[in-house]
Picture 1 (cartoon, rainbow, N blue to C red):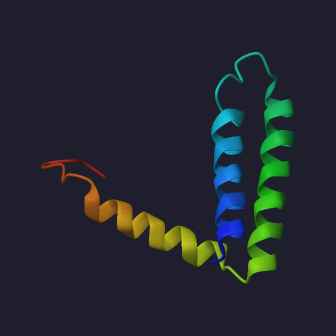
Picture 2: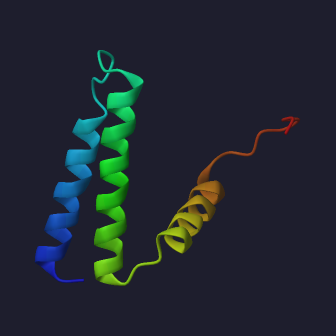
Length: 76
């Protein structure tokens, strides 16, 4: 991945982080519309770069699961 592309992804991550900071005054419909826009944008970006979002998400879940502590006796 080129340096400019990494910078753009870094900017997207920062924007997403700021997006969730304070949404307490918004209605469910407003939140739903905004999250829908974000999802469509991420799908578009991933498609443009040839990234399979489902596979990428599954890999991230697997990576994070390996780093989380095991909970003994947890019910599922």
